Image 1 (cartoon, helix red, strand yellow):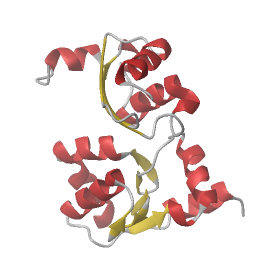
Image 2 (cartoon, rainbow over the protein chains, first blue to last red; image 1 turned 180 degrees about the horizontal axis):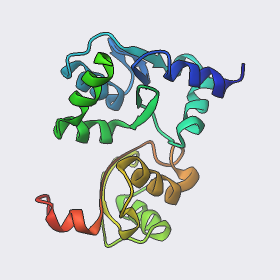
Image 3 (cartoon, chains in turn brown, yellow; image 1 turned 90 degrees about the horizontal axis):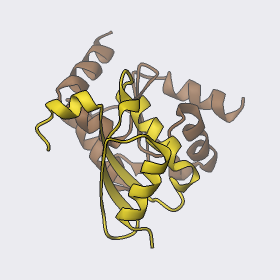
Image 4 (cartoon, chains in turn red, purple; image 1 turned 45 degrees about the vertical axis):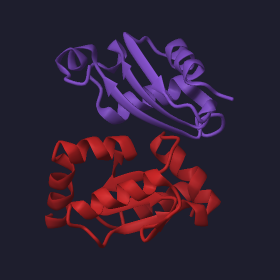
Length: 106
Length: 82
């Protein structure tokens, strides 16, 4: 299985998947930490987090997968939602809560 | 060291912009507000991808972190941020 297939399996393995630097309890980057907090603020403590610092192949591969050069990257129901800025905007508009809750309910 | 002005040039050279503001003075972390007619009809992910395309390989090498707010000219006209 190549890296892109591996990533595809990861992003579709659960409803909410976050690629980040570090772990949710110990983020290694402010943008990753802020994104974890926004997901938590949507009432979700238990989601799939992939630490890109632990795997250089994933760290490079995820940028190709989404055509997006930075981490964090949030996926809901296998779809790329955005990076830190977009996740924050969606949260401020109340849309992130809806997206996450309907994904978990579905 | 990369300056906000230089980064603003990079963005404007790769993207048709009505308005660009870049802030950040540590050479690595920047914030940009970008208004471009090329954003019209595109979602936020696609809008940010256009900016990343304009920056090319500089993203992730020369530029460590870029926070972005993107607006179509229409959104910008209605925005309260101005």
